[in-house]
Length: 217
Image (spheres, one colour):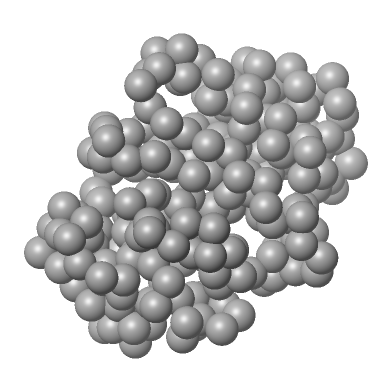
């Protein structure tokens, strides 16, 4: 089994890092596949290029890799190899073909559930993966079970049961919440405000040296 954590990562920040760190603690024996989106399907184009975002992920994870050398974390760039918009269902189908013996757990924030029925071929998702829902700051979903069910995913009692069930199940992972967003961080860079509480110094230096978000506004 493998955990799949995707996103624009424009830029990667402490909130993303917090999810990754908690995944390694909760599932120490499972590899984590980080998949940066190439061309978002439901959002505007990213401010940083794909190559820049991959480099920022690498810089952000470097100190973590030195501390947790046992954690298997891979940055998968397959979405940049496809033309057109990046669709999660296409990525999961590609992974399933490449690793037919492996099951995948798609890690999403709780706020994502309400928009997943807008995703391309979303009805296919429950055939290709499990779902692990991570809580988000100040975001409560009272009808989580109903939302997941409407997407084709059935609840299991605990996250460990995802490992022993076929695709189409979901569970929740509650972690300490980090209240930040890539949008706010980009605005801070544009306005010359500090971001040292939200992203690593290596990433800050890379962004400043490459003037990535200076023309955001």
